[in-house]
Length: 611
Image (tube, rainbow, N blue to C red; front, side, top):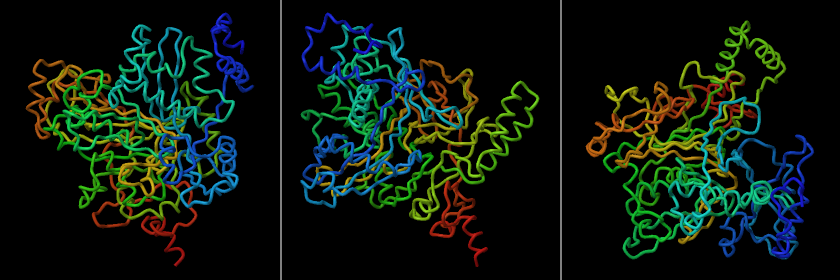
């Protein structure tokens, strides 16, 4: 037994343990920390990949990391391609694998079988406090010094009394509601464990060793995760079906049984659970629901206000087509692709991307700030930064990934949705770097707020959100998913993912309750919230329309400190005009005159020079 957790180990219990559990404990004791950091840190290697299975084995692979590949060949298969896996923050990697070699010649070759390798990309922290609480942080920030614009969410969850554990068992989860936060977190850690190298420190072993009386399986019941103010959105590799109930189900007879979903499918499921009356009624009838479902989170009278979808990534995959992007966008917009075939779905989405000019301007501003502050208390820091700046290569790493080859190959329908990343405040910029690393996806709520607010301390919000997601996921098929090849009628909504990702979804809540909240962007708010508990709030909300949102004076507004303009300027400034006004930032340029590069000022300049 590792002496590091001897305080939590009672040897008198040995006689009560099975031989298997004793063997497990002996195996765990062999797991040692890295000699780095004073021997107090464990590193666990996670393989974000899976073997795509043929149709008849699809059911087995749908669980995530499980596949038909023998256990003894699993690590070898991943290691074979590992040398090609240069870290790019999110660029999609897909490598062919000779299936005969992986299966030791036991199976015939199949064109559907190849190794799908993605990126292990989530950023999160779990702090187990001595008081008994747990602090959860979901972030876009890596474990590095602060050197880029990032975003984080944090909440502390108190421990519940053990007498209440049975009330929150697995069969008692209302999926899609905040109460499922612990279930989604536990599932994500389990999938992560399944993909870890042998003899690694796994979450379950860590908890058993260092947190008294806790196992991974008991995590969701140990803490009051139902107090979460956000929904947790995870992505794990594999084929995964959706879980939105079909419209034809009889709400009085059907026993609807939802299951855990991932990526955009998870967002679609949550929004359906909160905004679809049919789905909500089925949840009411389900034995898995602990409580009756209240009103829709956004009343029908305000549905027409649900506006543009905005995707703000720091990596843009180069293999998007209109069809594949619409597959993802439809889930975020709650659209049915079959029913909306004639609708230009991509007209409802913007993709925010920084330009070359943006980074040039940020560097200039940063140097001006440094020059102005050389004689302040920060002088020594500034001096070190300026010297370090001079040593940097001309192509500074900016955590943003789109190559000229990828941009050149994107369909025109995709690049036409690109808009400029612009700071939301003239002075908003990082002191030590001009890098971007924050990633988000959101849907706007278009409300007429051109009125004088009557609430004490409130201002007219600049923007309102139906929902906002802070996430590690960029705009690649590994993170956002793609339609599973040759999916049949039963798998019509099945998607395939290659990455591990994690994010949190903030949903505005307008249910005529005191707990109502509207997420906004308004840096002039005093504090992060404002709004009075107006006794007439219910009546105001019922009478509200998008053009006359009376409830804005009575609802609590929560400001999200978003570091860029919510509605940004298109790269293509004129409708029907394909040429870009400025050149998008490209981390690598191999050919400046190929494909779509001809539409950029940079590409046009090269073409003139070469003519």
